[in-house]
Length: 342
Image (cartoon, rainbow, N blue to C red; front, side):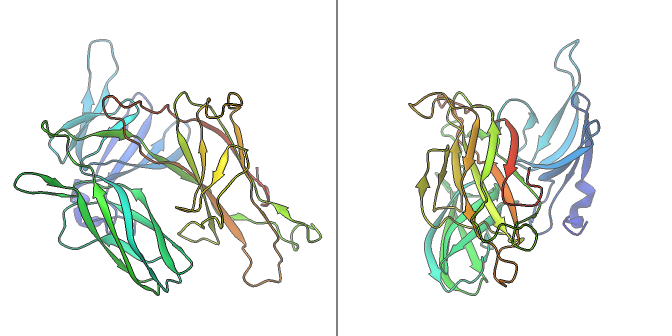
């Protein structure tokens, strides 16, 4: 309960989707500054599983709606932009959401990731950033929640630039700006994007010479993903979080070993294009391995002890005329070099 903004709890609501047997509790997170729910705790009443969902808009209410006779009831949602929405398909309409962050100055002296927020006095709610620090500089800023309502309307045009405040982390000098989704003129409709997703494992204990006898050998820490190849390009991003860190670790160098995954030095990610035809050598098999390795000794104070693996597909443009990426489907994940790693 400490995560929730209870100052607007009178606006929270529950909704059961009768078609999917999913119960959703619509809430707002503390610190987001939202005036309406922007996140839901979701519970599958049949599978007994739960997760969270967020939207690039603020939701205000929900009720059941029957589109035609003989069809089951389905929820519709009221939103802060005055529209009514029905969930369906593979895209979201982005209501002035944050879509990109540009680091204009990396600063210096950072020993840990700083705190990044939208500067005071600007509109918008619900965005959440994950800063990445490498070699004492702010190198990238990830968008974990896109939020809504950012940017400003002038006399004749919409200004999508959002200034950011950066504090803490032991360093100084870093600056960055964000960009909000502008309306599509002259209709003033907001563009659509694919629905992003992110899933992260818990902290997995790494193998070392105290719990597994490897006699000083190099330990395979590869991450294997089993997936359904897609018809269109669809980039899966893999990130690793060591020792319960809130920021992912960046790769030291860029590499492409031909296994499907490409090691990128920007954004702390290793990427996989899940398209079936990504390589001229043949159709993708649906199995790809990101190769990592290392040694780990129990008597070394600075050695890594745990790793959490995250898989994510960021939102991509899906406006009229753009090819909508295929829906990704992940069948399995295997992490090597950890205790009970499958």
